[in-house]
Amino acid sequence: MDPLLKKLILESGNWLRTLKSVQKNPDSENIHLFRLAIKQLNTFSIVIQFPGKKDAHAKTFAFLNKCFQTAGIIRNAELQLHRLSANSEICLINLIQKNERVHEKAKMKFIQLLESSNSSDLVKFQIAFSHEIEKLTSRQFLLKLNKTFQKNLKKLNKKTHQKSLRRNLHDMRIIIRRIIEIMNFIGFFEKDKAFIEFNEWLKTLNKKIGNWHDAESLHLSLLRYLKKNMPFNNACYEIADQLEIEMAFLEQEIENLLTNGL
Image (cartoon, rainbow, N blue to C red):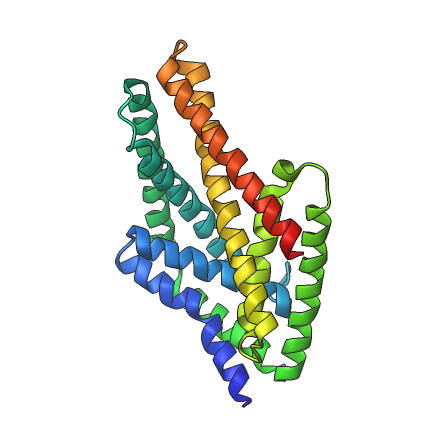
């Protein structure tokens, strides 16, 4: 077999290795690594177009993405708790407790999902996935990568030229993450200076948008909570204002990166 395809098949099994780790110890780091591996698996799936909606393994794929979504709720609650714990305002105590409940509930659901998984189905899924890659030559895989890369690059370019940057940041974040995953695969084949520079630019952009997303998520949670549960409180609204300033600053940095980079 083509040695590059061997590497890709090994890489495609990351999700199974991280799943086993998170089953043994569902801590924050293992959950984070599991989420990264499922993102990679989703990109793999788009490139090789497997499994299809009517494929026998579609149910297993849907199960893995359900685990991924639940893990995302855990991560978001942890990020908000980390930011909120830095403030001692009394008005935030109930919001902190609310996030703790969300985190605990999502963690329990995640563990239950892991316990309900069928190890035989998961292994069969990975075997079938590997076989789909084996059907290709390295050149065919690279052509599929290039097609997916160009498609996502066009999507990103379209989003960057629309009027409202803030409105498009969520979609841009998903597209950029996908392009980074594709470029990681392309890196198996070649890495020239232009490739490395573009990849670093994308990672910087992705980090800025990720920071913006985290600030926006907390900002919205805080405003919703204050509106429903608290009378006007200067200190807590000042925290919301600080988050708004942080978001505006990040938006400017993102806009500068887009202007200079594309």
